[in-house]
Image (cartoon, rainbow, N blue to C red; front, side, top):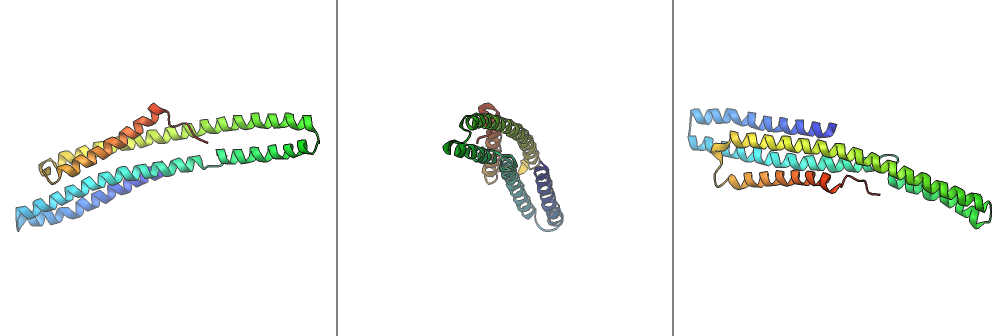
Length: 195
């Protein structure tokens, strides 16, 4: 979550800087030379803002994927549990093969199986909770990004033309598909951790 917020802040600062650095140039152009040159610069700024919003969506998904991988790979993950289960069962299985404490070893193996089934279920629940929290954060950030794109669209409404309209539509479609993808998490119950 911290990296998600940090990334959003960095991206917002980058856009602010790019807009802030282009504004003085616009003032000079508007005062002096030609209005057409100022319009071209504003259109280029609008293109950059659109590209920035698309990059933010991609960055949010990249952060989500990294956080999901980190959650699944934390200590006590399914692979570690399975490795431990196989080891302990192997110890008692050798006793059975050697004819040592056969009945007791079978009973202990059954206990180990039950214990590790419970541990896997607990791990599934942990991962499901963490992923659900992560997905809600992602959805919140994507909705915020959608609002920011709409603000930019209103701000640069006069610059929407045949040149910028396809870029804007592509950005809106990209954002809408990202939000749809997040919405499918809860409907398909994909938050259930896989082993």
